[in-house]
Length: 113
Length: 113
Image (cartoon, rainbow over all chains, first blue to last red; front, side, top):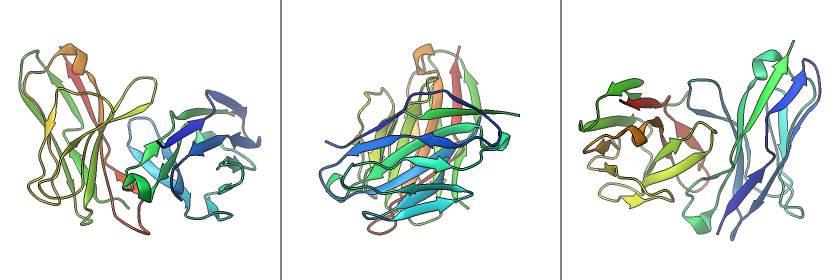
């Protein structure tokens, strides 16, 4: 079956530091890959996505590249802000899984001023 | 901006009461989902639907039930609430083929006392 593994948190950084959150996946088909963000008391919002190998998704300074050879989709940002503090979820949607989303366990990011 | 709505946002209810959590979307999505989110952030899929008159149980066993009589509406019902049902419930929907990202409601925080 499909699965998503992401690094455990919390990840604690100072403002303007470089961020990497690792994500690897297992899928039976050729999935689309996503990063979602959840702010306190809210639902999840799509942050970025990539639909095929070597695609790079980007949004709000965050980016992630679909690496089929390493089955990875790591999230990066060059300079984090306090307002980036949230929980980040890596996910996939696989046509062989009827496109039912599979989520990782979430990684909490805390950015200090 | 996501057009998926959950009501109520917060609910405190006594043990044994029957409750219905509402979820509606205006995007015409075929697929809809209910997730239970524990304090450790992980999302657990409890129910999903491929379309009208389709309902399936998810990975996490739940005493709740769902119905899908209309495309836009996917309510979740607990016949007799218990303290163990206390949790955050998230509703989501997604389209098909090239548009498979999930859109989430803001969630319902349920407390059973």
